[in-house]
Image (cartoon, rainbow, N blue to C red; front, top):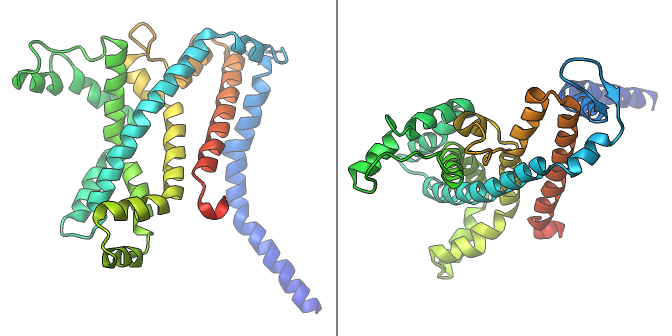
Length: 296
């Protein structure tokens, strides 16, 4: 009995040692920065100089900050545009490459290739593609007769927004495609064979087998996409600098400006905390709405 208890204790300690590095990483890169952000949000904390405790003043000021809520509204608009575009393109590509074929591996690699490019590099690349003097987009549209003169893509608020949505869709579709492809390949082939025997065509197989059984995959991909969209920064900072007339300032871009342009680190921390709470609530809502029937 004593030997069995000793073995159980050793196994328990071995388990603790295995998970310790992971817990240390999470504590170092998540919980400690989160605690520091909460602490800083309760202070008047300039980028340089002494700080002073001001309680909830930053949150009270934030509630009346029209610029913050406008940036949050713009970020929501951007998310509502880019998320459906990503899902539609990724789902179509996943359907195309899911069946084994001679070139399926090549197409999967080709569609995923833009994902490995950094967002900053992709943004710089597309700035040049959109350039009205040397960019290829205006040149192609003029070549086919759709434009009479080069188009300044970032000259209007909607033009800048849709240009960024197109770039992000090109870059991130491959990532969403892989998530959806994994979900598709997890569906047992027996279900499709039984459906074909019963006379179901491809549309009915997609409607009654593929889509219902991919609900949890959709929930995961949707959560990742929405969080990534709300945390978007690089593309707006590089491609439009928030213009024209501050019409493309995302919420993270506004947090960056508050911290490093206006030297209000405590206030920027309060905005970060509010954004975190919004994302937590949205993630719970998405996962609840797209939960599987087994968990309902």
